[in-house]
Length: 207
Image (cartoon, helix red, strand yellow):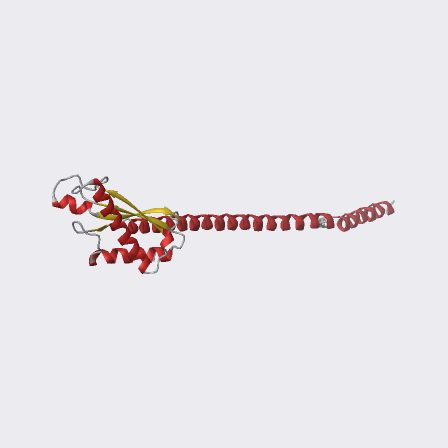
């Protein structure tokens, strides 16, 4: 009868020991490992992102280069237009003559010298020199006088190296006055020769 409690105690001790050995915090689960496929996909995504960023940068660089090129072209065309207009204005400067004369005055020679430079710098340029008179004298006489004035201006240019074939002449006599008055001031303005471009004047260079 005394052995029974000992057996019970032994069972209780064994149960306690088993409980102590099997209890406590369970070991951590192993960390998930990335598969080779997922690593490859991530690398491809990274490379695609880099490539897209490079492509965008290159696109922006091209657009900027094109914009700069367009601006430079516009600036160049504007500069050419300004220069051409300036040269045309220089050609339009008239020379004047004394009453009943066709000789080139010293102050007008400087104006013709400027036209020589323009013609030399623009070998395709062709011009016509128009001679004019004031209202005094007959129509026939003034047509002849206007022609002598135009020819005198042409001869000056030719004597300074300009090919005569590039220069035509015409006389308008008294038909196209600059000033409509009937006094010496108006007549002095009307006794003139002026240059008209007949070819090669679309783009002009300065002398």
